Image 1 (cartoon, rainbow, N blue to C red):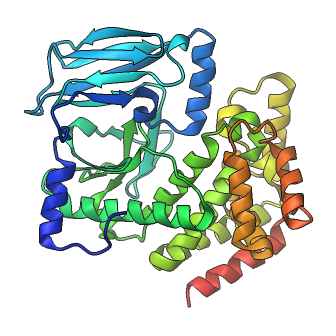
Image 2 (image 1 turned 30 degrees about the vertical axis):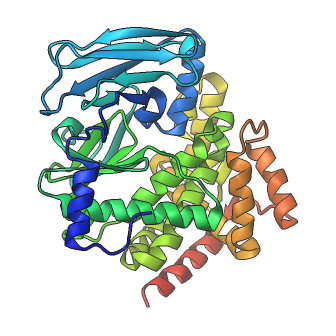
Length: 420
């Protein structure tokens, strides 16, 4: 755990230890776990495993920089797995692409020369977080892609913060935040959050900025420091993504597309609980959005919301075909509600579902649910299994079908408390 208060010598010492260049602390070659270092969310990992097992290699690019931070041309890397190995050589740009095959699973390793820094990426993952008030969607400018290799990198026990040169102070603030959140989640729910994980602080002015290939979420330094005209939710968003990543890594959404309200709902609840104590200004921003979204559903004539059917995981609904796809579209359009509006309201209602469970069973009920979700090789990690488990924990599982009028009143009450 990083300390909560820093003095100048401590800041300087940590900057030197964590390193702008990321060099090893000793002269030994570094061994990197390829799949873990990619930092892919759990949804992507589950699909990658299936893809590779079916004979389709995972393409991975390794970019290597030397002690002078320049691309390391001709660097020799060794790809190792149980039962084999192969030598890789970087090209003129200091990079080399290789494929991860089924025989290399579950944990291929890449050995990097001492003093060198390697960045791994795959074209299968793109993370995008809005950094300003600019428009997105059809007709909007293309997002700007953030080059992590152009930034300094601070690491600590699986946590990563990328930042521009000279912005070590704000990077340390972000690192302290990540360490505190990890301690909070582990202590309160026994939730060992997924790593590597982190964020990329930048000074870009583009409305949207992307990071490709890693579980590193981009935020502008102005937004992180709160120096923006509109109040933001940078801490809320970071906690949400970290919790959801941890919960879905075991295959939650993959086993059952109707369980999105579990991952997103618990992620929203834990973001709410942490920010209510440490970043209270972000709470009314989010709760106001909740109320507005439910109001929009009520205005459109919708009276109930089924979290299992109205709020499904994208990774599955994109692949629906035939009668199942037609049925999904019919449900999402029911009552004249736009699919996008119906979807975004799901965050509010999934939050409320788990907030009610917490009120009914306390933190112990949440601990038992989290332990059940992340239990290895859990064949019942689906909607039916969840109902059975909640019944055993609470005596009666709450219905995932939400009355919107009651939900609106409950969310408005929470908003009123947050603004006083």
